[in-house]
Image (cartoon, one colour):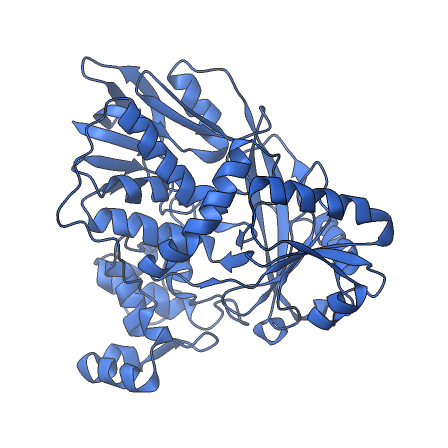
Length: 476
């Protein structure tokens, strides 16, 4: 019998699990995929928004501003890369009124340091911007982070403090029981819990319906992106937005915490909650709309593209409600990543008010050492580690400089990677210029060895993603 079951291991579910793990509770996180961070968390803009564009008084605005304040401490404790690089919302002269409007909204939301910059200062700050731009809103509290890294570290820290994680557990039904709820998987596994927290992203309406809540709907909004090589990472220093529309914050141009340049996303409402395909139309839109923000973008340096789905709720705001021991989180679209620490804080308060006993653990540890820690050490520190474990001296991924030791650590550090994409998200092996062309077979070999499985049983991202079917020549 668990005290709390969290459905969904995205960044919001992970942050909630981490916050609750500081208390003497039996917690279980359920995830239908083969790893955490497999929904919107693995494919979004990676922006810590300042909080100027959400409607004042909304849950989005409140959680955004509070989350932005909490993020520096959270990322420091979890060993997650965070850069306060500032953000600019740029505009042509005929869009000046919108810049002034979001400035006023940001002030009402409590965002600190906002100011409007004019053309001369704008191009002094960012020389590669489109020369037709007239002004911009500067938000000094804007930042960037790695979303899946934050999720992995949050879930890992929750597990370090006693929470359990069940992967490949697709919730098929939730039924009332004598002491709470009986949660059943599609494979027939059952677990009992006092409280259910629904953090299922685009499927949050489906999970809510299982508990008798049909008050809202969630549909996916497709967002396609391009990633440029690290030699383009300094093309802009700040996150460059254009004035927003009803479909979102538009196509941005932004550096990443790992040194690449990010372009996107598009915004297309769709019905299929699994459709993350990239399209020629998406590419064309990114290229055309990016030019509104910056000139001379080196599109020839694109090394990969991807698509994410935002969970757009029917209410227009974050849905956070507690009824009969079911806490539902729906429509947590942008700025959901930024808001995650604040949502977790808010959820704990709601559970406390509902009567859940929250006794803090004496041995709670808020810190988590990520698998990639070696990559950020000094030469002297690296040499000390290599002297103790020679695997850290063997390079596997040449593009990103990732060692065998880091890959082994990723397999054995909570939550341990079990497939190739899991290694990729934890270490960046395979994320460089060759996109895994050289290192993938070695990664498969290490996974097979460390997990004690056959080479051909190692998958790319879980069920249905077989990489190797057998040997083509030689050996037995």
